[in-house]
Image (cartoon, rainbow, N blue to C red; front, side):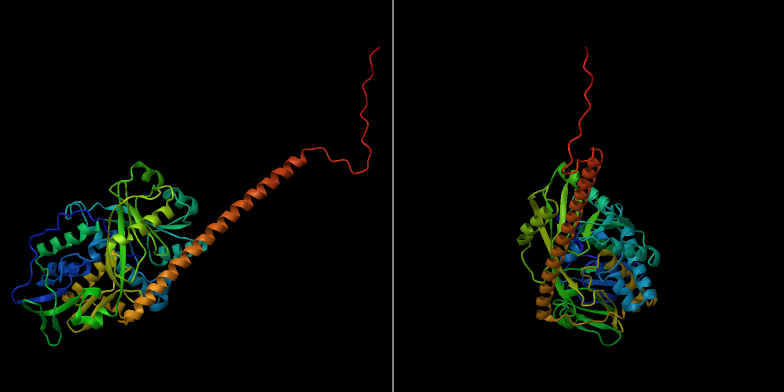
Length: 472
């Protein structure tokens, strides 16, 4: 699944007064490094189970990709389902998929208006194809519904285009149990719930060093020291110098999103579908927000840049998919960096006794970080071992600068290949339409020819018509 983004609207949690820098020595059961989606879920669940928890965040809650997402929640992983089965076998693939569904259920249970006012939950997500792959669609539907017990519907071309108002897409898979929320309010809502459960969150507190040997682990920050029985690393590509070897197993990928100005009634006249839409090549991801605005995520890049630079890029993408809208005005552009693993699965598990990791959520989705938080909290406090299902997906070096260059080139090739394949598919569709029109005209001409009298062969004298008798 693709990574997601939220609008830059103000959140009631943005200026929460209870978070401060750690300025005194502290002793806890669990120390979580990183106050993103996974880290706050670990803190919330561990605190609910009775552990003393401290969260150390080098900047502030949700400052990076966790606070800038489209908010789409649906089952699955970045690794295609066929590759997942090939890697771990059908039985373990089913278990992993079931865990991803549990993560989606966790977010749905937490993201209520009572717990997180203004969360704005809406239902349904549609994955559409850029090319005409009807047979592959049927095969995938059977795999998801029969082998993985996932509620899905296959949408034929006519229905996809009727709902989306564009000829760019062909078939689609509709997930009725998927949903979307205001992602920024969700991340700050998690912080509020974690604090209420007893977790302590310290912002502006980067980790200087970690000593994970011994029963009690030691963490040093610029202004205090902390000891804990367990350390959970959730900082992804921003873990910094003390954990550089871990952060180098992740390829940093930036993705930017934009929110348009209000587009009025014309948006609803074109785009009837109210859920999230993501294409099968991972290039475009969009949905309607606030009734008449479009929120749209751009293609990925492996290099950091100013968000405003991507405003025109997203404008062009919108005009390409929906030419009826033309050049829409952009109200805001934002984004963040995520860590992408080489194997396409998240990193979840125990590195050594008492040292845990939950990272690599780039392209994974909100459900996966929620599931990881649950799994690690229960593994520490209940002794569960479901994290071992992720053991086949080891920490693999992402290639450093060379890996980023290669990732950028692969991304360019992938987008170019997708554009060419889509153009070819639309050309073939147009050719089929023209052929059907030609055949229909030929059939009509033959029908018309069958009602006319037969032609006189060449050289045969014209028959003489009998003349009526003249009257006297």
